Length: 147
Image (cartoon, rainbow, N blue to C red):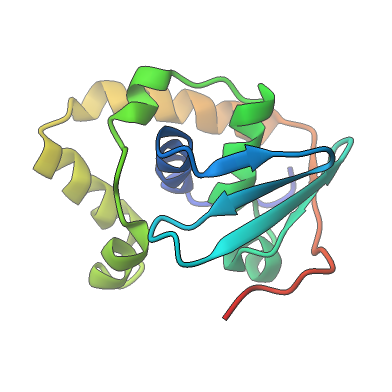
């Protein structure tokens, strides 16, 4: 992968999986936002992925919808129990509250929920390493981000 996302996008992908907001289809997936007000389309063909979420479309890295699809496809492994720790989080409002400081937003959740920070971060770093080594291409798709 040419450009890596912030590691915190993995936590948002955990939430999407834990909340059941990802539906795989043939060659695509639908992923609902954490506040369920938007639905993103992730398209994939072999090793080429695109999505109309803002991060993937505008920044050119795998946003959380793409990462969630990679989890669902088994291209990235994850621990379901860890993912479930991030269930029912409105990342949209949290990221606004922390002015897009994704690290601060994640740490606030870990602290508020009393989670074991070191073990969760260790696991997430391993996934991030696997994401880094994944031989996929992130491409701007035809669908534009939703407003």
